[in-house]
Length: 101
Image (cartoon, rainbow, N blue to C red):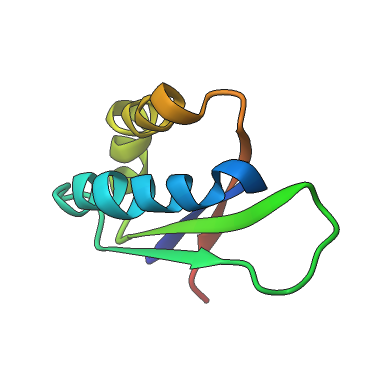
């Protein structure tokens, strides 16, 4: 079973580029070092949506529900803490878990 854990962020425009850099330079290398995560992708939404910020998607591919649970239990809070150190109050996010068909 392949799963995709998708984190969609809405980041204030004034902080979007720095947020992207933080994710690219620090968050993705941290996640890539984890055995539970098979692959990481990072996307910027280019479809125009009327919001007050930039929409970004961080996608984590895992092989099993156990790998997902391991990430959630140990590493999710670390990732969010890394973001909050610089961007607390400048973004909101929601998470979706998807299963390959």
